[in-house]
Length: 446
Image (cartoon, rainbow, N blue to C red; front, side, top):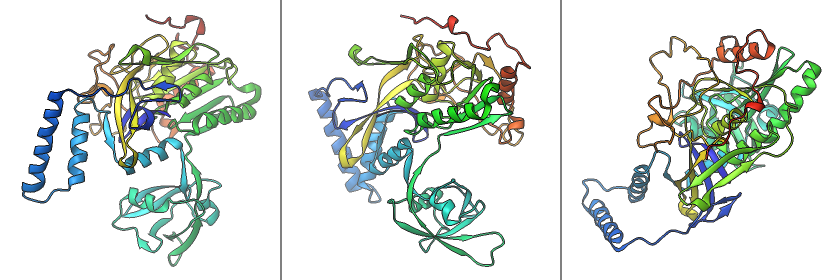
């Protein structure tokens, strides 16, 4: 399994391997086994052991030994680059849930408000919606335990669990004179990484919020649904990759392939030449060649950049928005059994034309800035790989760096980038970059 996306809050490209050693999985060769360290290296490791013993026995307060070791490992890895790190067993399990796109749970989107868990919305056809949970409910207890004092993550973990196991949540509901106990039986909940709708009656809008195991299936279903709703009126599609931090590599390849008939989608190059891999498109365009506009901003990273880069190089889509995050390195996840996993940077990836986006990002064909509301002006900064301390300097990185502001207005009438795209597709606005012309595809640099 190969992942390209957020890992511990930072965009990362990941390759998951077998326990403790290199190997081949999902078509990715990890390469050579670890080479034994020299005598001087082992002497330095003895120094580390001496320092650890001194801290353990003489520090003013008794330290947590496991925490010391974990921090030492993370210190070693973080000195390499911002994306290499150690995952303990819990963090590794959380990563599996995130990338799988499904888990045993209730099926509610929640937030924390006034120290209680507030239901934003129950997901349709899930145990929560069937049991009668409604938007606006405040969860005060989970199996009799008060929610106050818990973080949102702790509360979410308590609500998740094995499929077919019951849970009782106590909610306060507007209009109810007393708290309500609701018994829910957990089921498999699939995270919706694809959301779609028809704009007006002639443009398909598809937003990808991540790249999980469910994404390509959700994309094809969304395309089919839009085709049925619009019929002959369909003029084109807007694919929204803004604020999409990434996910699974095979899903980014499949998503790109959905719009391409042929050609390379992405390549990865490691330390050794034999580690290079290329991923190619198969015949067939799910949209029938309809015009495409891809929306990106500073929150579009990794897998999102692979899709945007592939469709831009092949001139299959027009890229609109602001410069993307610029995350172009690959991390390998090496299982350490019950002790968690090691996440180590092992390669860089390149667009079909051979461009490295590391520290540079994808530059839109049409730059459209989204104004920030006054409440956010001066409070948020443009994000990007080039701004991360210790990042690997990209081959094409320049003084401009990578990234931009990452913001989408909650009300689509204020969404300047989306509305610009809709005007282009409907012909009320023109630009030389739209529609994209596959005959002008970029040639691969060697």
